Image 1: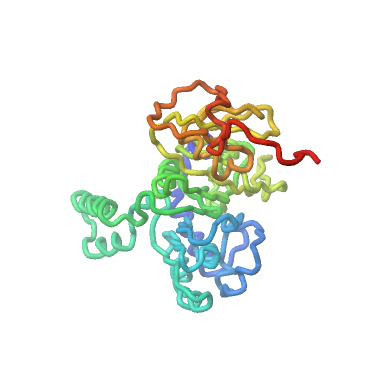
Image 2: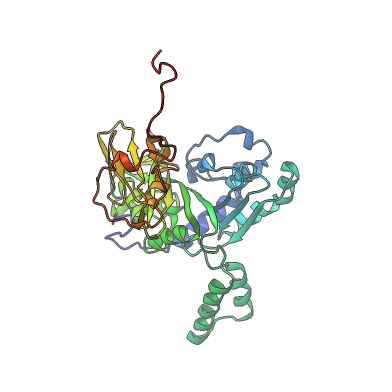
Length: 387
């Protein structure tokens, strides 16, 4: 685990309070140091109020990778800029849910909902209060309960915790397996180190199988120093909590994601502190699915250019060879992000009683069983194929 996730030196301040206070101020007055320059597709910015454009803080544009009709959650949605871009992209059949725990930011985002809905012709946005590492707990009914039941003793605190657990179970803020995509723009690095594994677990929980996380965040090429970690301004400024870029991807792998792809990595660092480079990176990761795998005589051919590649499950594909894969892997490789690099080879006849897939990797799939469903024993030449 990186120093940023598990610092060897104790942090001598309350990270959550530090972050909340700085972003509360950022909601009142624009603060340029809270973000690095980002290019957005201008066609989606035309309808946005100046207040939203001024008080948006991010480091990338994950909205570019979302499609029409999808349900999308924006973690740390702030004043709603990314949500209102997404609202236009997913259309009237899609839905956008912004999650933030900063009341000032939420107030600005909600203030413009009706205005923007009128401009685009439909209402498909919702802004909710919650912590991104605890997406089951809706903080607004929790706060309402707390207002009526102030805590003065340990017993009363336990009653509040029990009420929070009840809310998580009965009315979760974001239900399990309910969204197509989760985006985040320079927010994951603001979460406390001890909560980051829970954060990745929550990403996995709310996504549908095959759904994807599209994350723009600040990463570093070396572990932050104790000096950086113990600077409150650097933490709230998206520096001290930065992920080391190689282990950022590893955290997704360890949390059950596959198909990790770096969509954009800024060549020029945003900042260099103590010789450590901090830059913006956007990646995409797909949620895996735990299921039984069967052998249906399917195969795949890896196009190249590498001599061979290996996926997260240890499946090895050798360039140009017809490799045996399970039905689950075959389906996965037939979709993004693999489909452009893979030739899928179906069996020439359906396997009526498939057996559990237990084939060492890499193993060749005999052409006799995987010629495709349109296989014919003999075909006549009708014209030159090379003329």
